[in-house]
Length: 319
Image 1 (cartoon, helix red, strand yellow):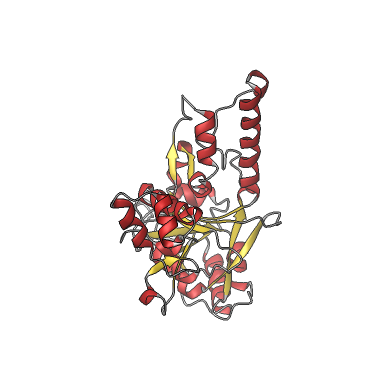
Image 2 (cartoon, helix red, strand yellow):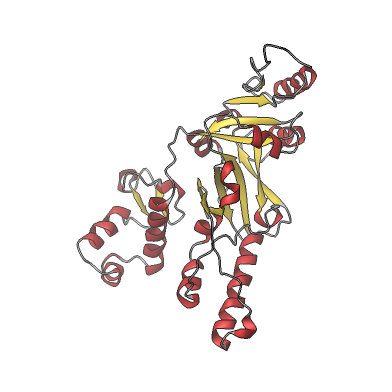
């Protein structure tokens, strides 16, 4: 139980004056640990539902969260995470004024359907099958599942970071502004403390992305489709192996919001940002501009030149 971060499970809560702050099922006094103890002792879910007055859906949500958490790549609270961006996005992070007293900026969560990767939300999904060649029941299921995947892309909002210990040249280049790029350095613990998810976004999670080379060769449509319908976050934490160089860490919101491109989530910027770097090829004037913007909005971290540029000049100098 201890390794699981229950703060990321929307089905449970911790209230100081309820069970001494232990994690309990939401709106109950039922400790999460009691269910696991009963299951380990051989009790059925039906028996637990009857005895402790929690619903099957509540128990299932907690079991799925535990399974997903134990299967996820381990990420320590102190793991560095990096967010590469251009100057307009940096200004937006600092300048947005959310209606939350403890927030002084906002972090952009982009809708999954706006990502350049057209396979976002489909990685490790159903291999393409022409419904016209299938039996009516299976064809109907395939079409319904593909539409569900498309809908998941419409209502999923993601903040993408990289979980390397240092800056990477490929990531500087991929942000589209190699000479005028910016990266903010944070860590997992800072992120979880500083990003203030509003109550209207109850379905949130964060974790490392898994990368897969191939689609499954054998696929039981009935079993696997119905299984995947319960695994929204697990699906969104999967990508194709061609993106493995990113070593991505994501925060995800799943909600039926009618937003075209994304949502701004309130954040304590000074709590989130540990350091700020400008790209290795950035000019001195660009560094001064970024430093001026940071000062204007009260950012405590002083922008620095990329560590990849420090001492990087070869002994024979520039051409």
